[in-house]
Image (cartoon, rainbow, N blue to C red):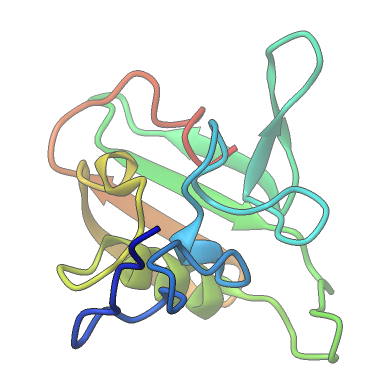
Length: 140
């Protein structure tokens, strides 16, 4: 069997060329583009009946034109090491996942995002380039 060699600058790949599953922005399986449930949590989730429910976002609103999603985040959430979760983490994670040099196999889910603003530590505003009716399902 011939092994693929790691290409120069191909971050997030193991020597055998497969995605490094320890990195949430390099997930490449199923309908789970924003994290691995049980290890990584999203802003929202889909319940067993297919309804969008709160997770790290306490609540959210969608602007009338469908271009701006305002997520109010759960307060007092911390990572396993005690680092607080806030809107800057949301912005960093989404910017990293949608970056031109990202190895994220689910990049199509991030294409509609135009910008991410953090007006305060518990609010993330995601502005889309165009209305996308399924946008709330993608971060779930």
